[in-house]
Image 1: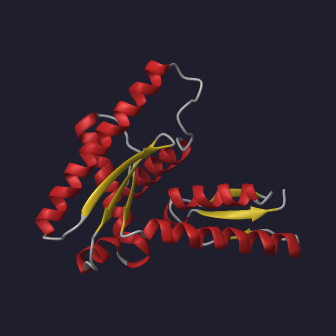
Image 2: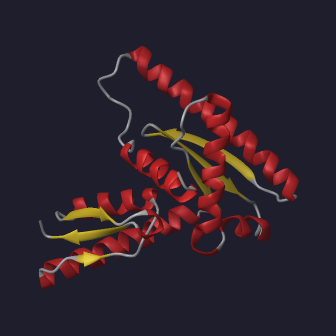
Length: 188
């Protein structure tokens, strides 16, 4: 299996796991899931802290668990050039660093992680941009009645767009493979 197909399979598996923790689960099951997410956050933070130390980059690491997922943020009090380098062009370095962090968690805990890494608020800003893309696509579909294919994006970004399109009352579907996987928005 090639590295690209392995990455694709792993990304697709993670995309399929985007449902929050079962609200009807027993208190023990919820506590176990919360404990697992906290452990993965701690492992990820240790890994990232070591990386920042090696790269001599200043940054504070925040861990938050919500909706059945661990969110890790690296922020700096001042403008830190090094952190911007960890985001890269179009978030490419950030995506790679997130995958490496997930692998570090898998290695330490033997559990696959769905953690989301953000650096200097890039993902928050990108979420706003993705909401706008979904709104523009929905407006075009409503106006023309024709489906709209969007640019390729990561599984996490596609999830954001799928949710936004659904909130706008339209249908979206992921198509394509690997780096070319994208969303098509339609009326039905």
